[in-house]
Length: 116
Image 1 (cartoon, rainbow, N blue to C red):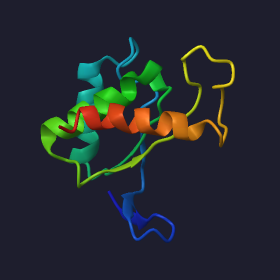
Image 2 (cartoon, rainbow, N blue to C red):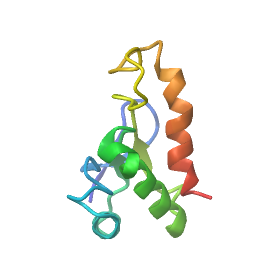
Image 3 (cartoon, rainbow, N blue to C red):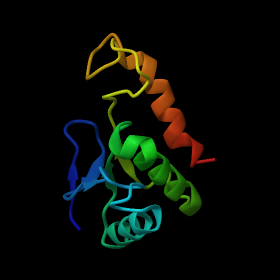
Image 4 (tube, one colour):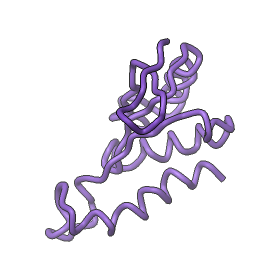
């Protein structure tokens, strides 16, 4: 798979970014998600898109665990974002600048849990 520059970041990412919307859900159980990621990397992919709301947080956990088990931390580029928190607070809804710091730390912890 061909690599392309990611804007002016200096990073090179695969032309195809792997989406993880259903990873860890009933639609794409953990084992299936792992097989998809394995094949994607085998084909030269290095760019995975995720978010804290994908599959209720299960997608980030699945990705973090898989990366950690395979020692791929320094070989992949993750594009993540925060949205639709599920903590019940009506002020914690959607994409909003004031709320992002509240969830970025938790999101990074979810991804990082699998990396240790």
